[in-house]
Image (cartoon, rainbow, N blue to C red):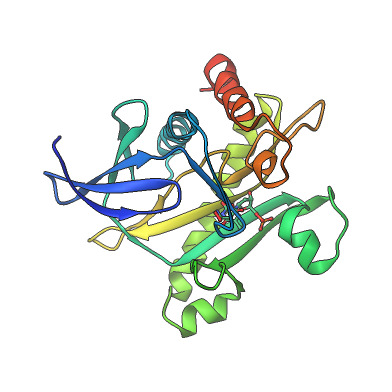
Length: 238
Ligand code: TMP
Ligand code: ASP
């Protein structure tokens, strides 16, 4: 597969064309950003770990019948994905209260929710990804009622599958963000990445944070936490 021109550079990844118009190459960067890129750093090895972790999780979800854009990992920092049009709605699922949920609504930190909470955010760097309602997405044509119903259904399945996966690694899946896209035939595919950049992972026994919160909150040893997730996946995961 030949790498063509760069089509897009995001905060954490670069996307390239390939000789197949239906396939894109994703190159994971070492950049770390938080608070809508107001805080930035470079971390050697982060792109590799996120590519390894996200590839493995997408392989697992593909195997469990979740429709995703993921094709294959081609080396340490790069993977091939199906080209999709990204729906500009970020889908956050929460199992335990923390982060912006607590700041926004004043609810206590660390509460186990009786059922998962699914929230929608508009994917917009200019606006800092504001929280939106389904009705906003429908009325402004960012998505349709039918797509959002399907997105919610897939998201809840992914939550269940990932919760089970991480339980076996003694990791609690606190919350995570998903993105969806549509292929040229109109199929809805889980897209983007699933990594310590986009999930909150807590060690089951110590409660230690094993994700990007270490960077957001200046807790130190960011790369060590990402490495710990990858080590547990390779030793105990599928
Ligand atoms: P939040 O509590 O900051 O809203 O984050 C909820 C989850 O979504 C958390 O796992 C981190 C993830 N997330 C992203 O992947 N990208 C983002 O831009 C934001 C704000 C959160
Ligand atoms: N991904 C967002 C940013 O870079 C926010 C975050 O994850 O905290 O800026």
